[in-house]
Image (cartoon, one colour):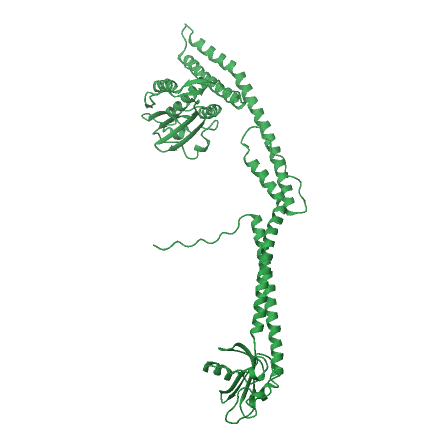
Length: 492
């Protein structure tokens, strides 16, 4: 099993961090360029100074080399040459046919302090490889480190090599690198801190826009009257951040106007639904009453008339239920409170299932109730209507023989009521809208298209449960559909 690959470092995500990082990176690149240019220039300048000194030394020192001035030649007995005017650290060597015959190093300009230098064979080869062109070259000697040397021809067919040390140049360059590194490092730290503070101060209007947008995102904008928060404080419209703040304020103004108009339209629709429902109750009840009265006529009534009267009575009854449902939804939308009192859900479930089994004897009805009664605080009549609507929905939208299971349980602070059936399930495209008004999908769940309704039953369930402080959920798949209602329980 291979080792996991190391994760690549993540780039900063916030604009503030990116701007600060960009500022520090640009400064670091600038400092590196300045430092590199200074080091290269200083190294070149000091090296040229050494070359100038080497040019002066090269006009005097070869004479001493040819006379054996640095190292006594016991065979010819020559005296030391004049080395008093040579710079400290000056190196000289005499090569004959590629072999070093004389070599020496001046420590302080005094012949008494002149020292012989132990050169290796590799050093001899390096000295022999120096071009005899009168130009300075850099050679690294094992005993002396780097030297700047010049090779020239002697009078006896030999080669004279003179050099000056580069250690002072290297020391000055290293000191510049150290000082530049410390100064530029401190500059980067100070710039990073100051830049972060400056960027944060410059982006304060953007932070206020973000805070305002966060507050707007937390508002319930789906329905009801919405009051948007105050606009962002004034910002400089000449800056990009100020332009963003201004555009955001204008957008909030448009959104607020649209929400206000939508709320006004919703209020008019609610008033219209409530008024229309209220006004329709009396004529619908009157039509139903006259139809039932006509059916009670003792005299002979033609079969066609009798059938028509029964249809009028049935449709007027269904219309009356629809009007009552619309009136209930209008009242709930208006925020009218429901009754509050202790409700025994166990008793309500028993009654509702008994009614459903009588209305749908072809279905199999199953109860799963706890041993102890489950009590909530709410409107008993409306909660019974919730149960009746859920059971009616399961009966009308599933084929005969479907098993419907009603489960009641007391959980942590809530009462859970579930109505489960093993029918064909709710179509996937209908599920997001199943609790909306006038949503009808009975022709999809019921194989023969039977059943039906106005599409208000589940919307009443959702509205009543929400008014009671609970929630209702749907989980559906072919062969398993469950409506789950959760209601808060009173604390004991």
